[in-house]
Image 1 (tube, helix red, strand yellow):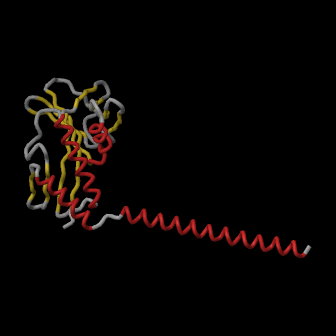
Image 2: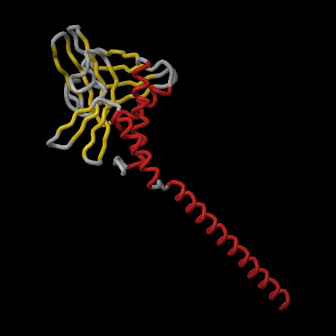
Length: 221
């Protein structure tokens, strides 16, 4: 009886030892995998410098306007004056010292008498659509980046927000077929079909935005 008891006790201790070793091994493996994953995500100084060079290459190819007092430079595709009297989907950028940021701008121009007073944007392709509701927009006229303006020969309705607000919608447009933006108000809506130039412009903006993520919105020398 005593022999059976000792045998059972030895087996229990042996199995416990094996289980413990296996647990330690799994823990070490998980720790090693986590460490390896973390090291892969680390961005090197050289990568940040390369991304910074790409950022400046793109910005320097654009029309720019500098405020010498504020030490602030704006890079706008429509130039230093007002934007053209036409529908357009833009992005533009600002730089102060070594900090950079991006904004998105949608322009809706018409020479007709009616207003859409849109407060919702639908980014649409053949396969999918995404809606963006303008926050704190009063009657589709102002607030949340929305504005309206009457000029000689027509009128503008525009939206000006951080690029990140429209990033998802912009990416949908450049990656899908038949890209359309629908501007929707309380009673009316207006559809704008993007041109090839629009798409190329947005692709450059998305690439620039991704490079800025690498540098943390800074220019690394």
